[in-house]
Amino acid sequence: MNAPNPDRALRIALIAVGLVYTFGLYPLTVLWPDGFMWMPRQAEYEQMILATFAVLGVFLLLAARAPAEHRSLIGFAGWSSLVHGLVMLVQALRDPMEQANLFGDIPALIVVGVLLLVLNRPAVSPARG
Image 1 (cartoon, rainbow, N blue to C red):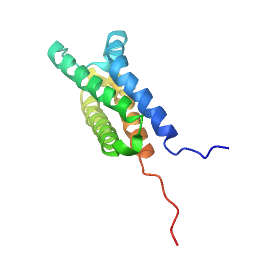
Image 2 (image 1 turned 135 degrees about the vertical axis):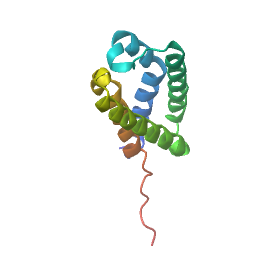
Image 3 (image 1 turned 180 degrees about the horizontal axis):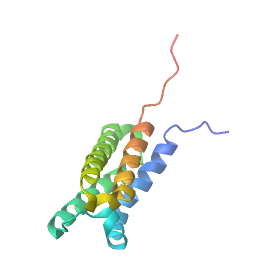
């Protein structure tokens, strides 16, 4: 029987988040712009943020091959997603025009951030005698 792999859940999360960041965000902005875009719409900003997330997504996919070797990248992705989501939460609570984002990109980023941070903890090695 195979021993459980502590990085299996992290690998799955990295692949899922990497795919969404790389290929899924643009379709979400088209399908549900109120939940994934902010007003006023600004094409230049939207292209920059989508490109940044796409690049991060590619590197998360690469990190899924050997998560233990990429803990700092995974930590960055987790913390940056969480903080990005929390900043947007405050902004959406203060601006009634952005409240649809409370059900779109804001919870998505917060969940991604928490998920990556929780799963990124190093494996505990048995105590040596």
